[in-house]
Structure formats: structure tokens, C-alpha cells
Image 1 (spheres, helix red, strand yellow):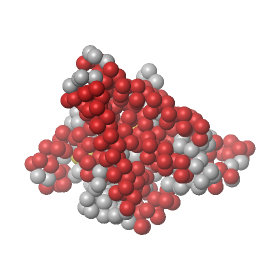
Image 2 (spheres, rainbow, N blue to C red):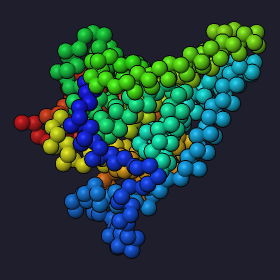
Image 3 (cartoon, rainbow, N blue to C red):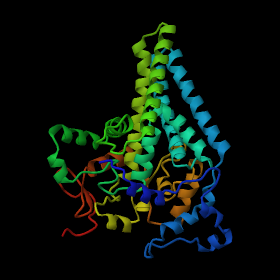
Image 4 (cartoon, helix red, strand yellow):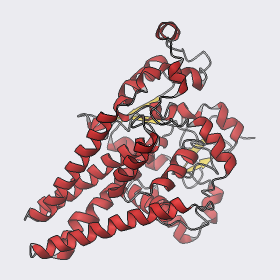
Length: 396
């Protein structure tokens, strides 16, 4: 259950430091280049993992944020989104309209990544500006800024892959799966088939937790949650109304224009974010934990994330969000420095970071292997409980 308590928030604030208005984190002021460089050397696998504070010190030079660059990124992606939106109206061939709709969905993903950085206070050095830029960037994805802040920054980053806290793609045990209704089992099979990550995100994350969530989904009730939910509702209403007006003004089918300019982009966006979050934390080498002390010892900021690599600079098109280990190590690093940060971590921590070249064969094999999780043996299993990854401990 997505439950936020003052205790969990306090713990996560310690993990996810906030940046004051116009200031970099205090740790930057303590940076001594000559001293740091002498300490930066690859850590062999037979040596203990350095403390997270030490690893973050390595990345201090890459935590600098540039306001102008961030604003230009936001304006550029909004211009691209608007251009594809216009294409769904003014292009005549159906294939061109649909192609623009798909491109819109991808651009919504790019805008979301900018908003994601702003929500982490890593986009610009200005806290207030980050909040406004985050809300603006989140609008096309219909993401509620304050609810995403709690669910992602506090819960997911504070307790990554800790069962009972982190709810994103949290695997069920064989016993939990057996207790589900027939519909629940059917949905779980669909979610983890590899074909429906967008369905998972749209139902389990967006609908249940991002749009006027119930008290069951969000026990903490704050006025800002309602205000932000109203904000995305107004934007969605204006978006739909604008497309209806455009269809009527150009004597086109309203249903067709809405399909290409609203439905297709949103569905593609849901599929994109569902896929991205799934591959970030689902892998036969990635462990989940149900014991907090064991989870803490596992260095979850490194061991629970995957760096998925792509050909043709596809990762750059997604604002380097796939350089995910660096992001979990230090959320203050802006998206335009993640590539360098990830490369540095992989150089200094050889063999400890999961680097996975993407292929559809690998993706669907992962979907077949990672159905349920056995917390006793600490391994992934299929729906019959058979181990599909190497158990990391002997059953009691």
C-alpha cells in the first residue's frame, strides 16, 4: 500500500537532499578537487562497497545545474510536441496522423523526464522555478506533480525494491498470487507478459495514484494533491476541447482527430513509461527484499537498478534516463550530466553495476523469467514457483 508517514518522509529527506533556492548542496562547498582525485580509483569486487556518501563525492563535479539550459530544453520539447500536435490535424493521410500521434507520445515522455528532474530539484538551482517547470512539463502526461513527488521521490527512491514500501512493479510471491481473484491473476499475467507495461502503468500508477487518489491509495490528504489533480484535469479538458474545435474547423471526423491527437499519444506515453520503469528495476540479477536490514546491507542504490544501453543514441533521445544507476546514487545530478556520471560509476565500480544491452529477445526472456519472487531463496520464479534466477541464499 502506498502509505506515507512522517517517519518515512524524514528518512527519505535524508536520502534525497533538497536544494535550497539558488544554492547548490552544502557538500559541493566542501569539494576539494586535488583531494578527491587522489581517492578516485576502481574498487575491485573483492573489496567492500564504498559508503554511498563516498560514491556521491565522486559525482560532485557533475551536479552543477544550469538554468538557461534547462529552460531551453523545456521550450524545445514543448515546441516539438506542439508541432506533432498540429500534424495530427493538418496532415491528411491517416498514417501521417498516426505517426504524429506516436511521435507526440514519445515527446510527452521527453517532457516527463524534464519534469522528473525538476521534481527531484535537479533541473535548475532554483527550488521555486523547479516546481513550476515540473508542473508545466508534467501537463501533457497528465501527471500530478505533488503526488508524483511523494510516490516517486519519497517512496520509490527512499525504499527502492523494498517490498511493502516500494510499490512500483513490486513482484508478488507465489502465495500472494494464489490469493488473488481470477481477475487479479489475469491482470498480473498480462502486466508481466512483456506486452502490456502500459496497461500496468495506466491502471496501477496513473489511475489509482495520480488522479484524485482514494484514501486507501493515499492515506495522507493534502490540499496540494487536489489542486494539482485539478490542474491536470483542466489541461486535459482544454486539450480535448481544442482538438474537437480543430476537427470541426477543418471539417474532419472529431473521433479521428481525437484518436490521433489525444488517445494514441497518451497510450504510447503510458507504454513508454511502463516499459522504462519495468526495465529499470526488473532483471534476473536484480534482487527484491522484504527485510529492511538486509535491504540496507545490499546497497540498493546500486544493486537494484539497471543501465540499459541502446544503439543509434536512442538513450540520448530519452534525455539519458536509462543511465539509471547514476540517478539513484545521486538524484541531484541533472539529466544533461547523467551520461558522464554513469560512465564514471562504471569505471570506479567495475562489475558491480548491471549493464544490459537492449534487445527484444532479452526483454521478453526477462518477462518470462521475472513473474514472481521468492524472498526466502531470494530469486525470481515463474508462476509455478520454479526458480528462474540464481538463488542468492539457501532456504531456511
